Image 1 (tube, rainbow, N blue to C red):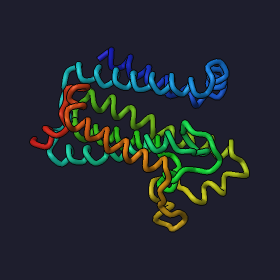
Image 2: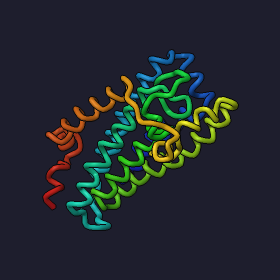
Image 3: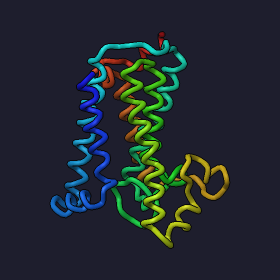
Length: 227
C-alpha cells in the first residue's frame, strides 16, 4: 500500500504545478511552452499508469459487492470522462485547464467551462462504483476529490485573472455540466477539436475494451458485466 501512497502523491504533486504560476512560468521559460506541455503530458500519463498498477498489486479488501449495474455505469461514465478530458485539453479555454491558448472558447465549453476536471471526476467516480474496494476508494476517490477541489480553485482563479472579460465567458458557459445548455444560455455546436476528441475517445475506448485495459491493468471491463 505504501507504493500506492507514493505514486498517488507524485501524481497529485505533478498536477499541482500548473496552479503555481511562478513554477509553471519558470518551466515554460526554460523549456518552451510546447516542450513543457509534451513533457508534462507524458509524465502525467506515466504517473497515472504507475498509480493504477500500484493499486492493482495491493491487497483487495472489499467494501461493497460490485454488480453488473456498477460495471455498466463505469462503461458509460469513463468514456464520457475521457471525452471531456480530451476535448478540454485540445480546445481553447481561457477559463480553465487547456493545452491551447486563445480567447475564443472551444465548443466543449458549452457543456462546462471545466471539461478536463469534470472528466476526471466522472472517470474516477465510475471506477469507484465498479470496484468497491479500499484501494479503489483511495486511488480513484482521491483523484476525484482532488479534481473536484480543483474545479472551485480554477473558477476562483479564472474570475480574478480575466477581470472584466469574465462575464462574457461566464454567460455562455457554466461551472456545472449542462447548466448553460439547459437554461438556453448556450447551444451545443461542433468544432474540429470536439470532433477530434469524439474520434479519439471512440478509438481508445474500443482498444481498451478489446484487451488494452486488461493488458495495462489486469482487469477486463467487459468480463465485469458477467458478475
